[in-house]
Length: 203
Image (cartoon, rainbow, N blue to C red):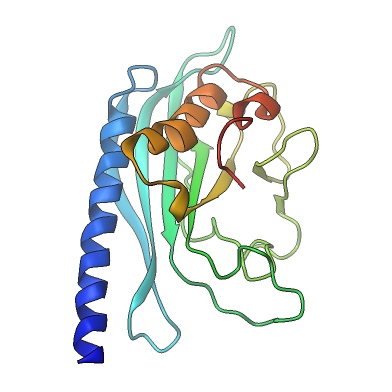
């Protein structure tokens, strides 16, 4: 009976996440400011024993992203990932969110895009790129993990992502508040992250 319930719960969860990604697409495609193109699943990860999947990443391609004065609009890619589980390898230095399901929201300009490399391990460090390619949030740019070596006067010219708990999304309004509004503020308005995330539940 326990196995039966477990599988049933997994099927229900799979349907819930499919609905979540569809709502995200509806919200993103409804924004006139960046011209939504299409969506594609770019990663679906399974546990080490291969028994079940635990993370899924969806890419949302955009036709036109503001580039600032004197620059033409160009394409870009948003990636939204839901990670339900992560391997715990160090109990002594465990990150406070290590055992919580997380949502990752990232952007790359041009044709590049985040995939399952947009993830944090049980210590709260990037799972991929251990040599510092991904910079953690700073006092100047709080909440944003940024790609090393990229610098510019606009967030639409840089690669970055932010993280929030899955439980922070309970209603459609939470998606607008914690995901779509910050994206719009960064990509369209080029706002200061200190103000962008002030009233959100972004970690």
